[in-house]
Length: 51
Image (tube, rainbow, N blue to C red; front, top):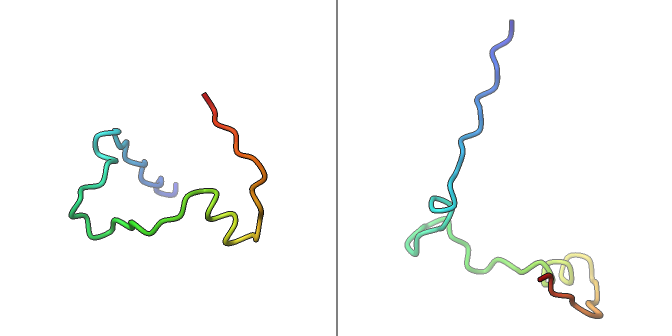
């Protein structure tokens, strides 16, 4: 029998919030709309908010 893959570790919401001094924190990340416009050359005609 082959060894099983390690189970993914459960991460709570409290642990998922980055600290201000986190060296891996990327403040220059694009929003979904900005990413689509930059990568695909899309034009956003209208944006709907989900409530």
